[in-house]
Length: 194
Length: 194
Image (tube, rainbow over all chains, first blue to last red; front, side, top):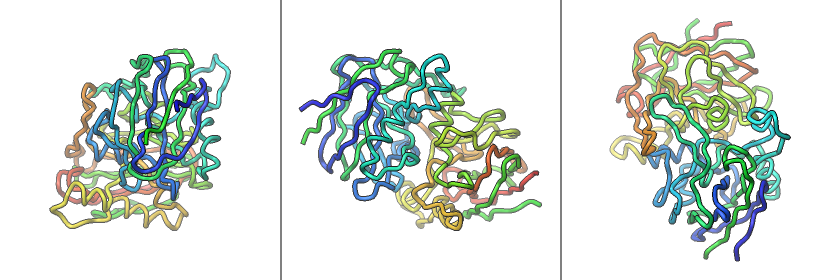
């Protein structure tokens, strides 16, 4: 059954080893922040640094694996309609809203949404690090290092499927920031394929 | 007084707000992994994702600031002889030695050295995330996303100076991995300029 994350909100759930999580951009041009923790010890968490090191790339797609801070495989990307995701940036938060959107009302952002959703699993906010941001379009320049945040290229119905390599707690959002989704807030769909 | 970190080892120390840490590549072509925690609550830690977001670049040099997971400035780069540092990769560890250097003896790496040095400050190993790797040369390709690890361009006596923006606990190493320093292990120098 397809679950729906309303615009500017988030959720958390268990994903057991071998299960496949399918995340769908229901309307197109929307970002979903994903973080993952080992279900039996949430101090083991998704790590962009370990992932970049082992995968030898900053651009992750089908066949790549997301690694934990303890050097264990957490999730392998098994199907990717979009081929554009970000693993450089942290979830938007009250502080990033104040910094980047001083003209807009402050929102707790993906960070606040993840913190609330993950609290019942024993994940403290300080352990919510750099997220794997599905469909997020962050071009970087190899010479200058400059990064930009552009609208996602995903179209309605595009999905990414990730297979769990260990028992996990997943946090997942429909992103709340203006720049990451081209200025419109939309829902995100997800379901577990066993 | 100049302190010396012997090859393949690490240290930890307090750095108070306003003090400047000078890190010197004593012999040239060596990497130093640096991590930082808020002295009054080590759950607040250096964050590459927050830093990339606020600084809008992956390449950090004089004038750039390193940010915490709570969106506070931790360190500002105030002098840089080299202009080549990495903030994408995690410290080398037993697991990365097994992965990248199966023909060499396993070493606990910068991760093990940092874990031991930071334990007296109450920093658990799982909180040692992506480090700011001084002088480390990790070119990335904007089109493919591929990264490589090349020898550092730093010459003997080159230094980086970082000003503390809050009271900090610093972890610092002379890197233990073959690829990051061109295959030779050398010391790192540091001192605090008040």
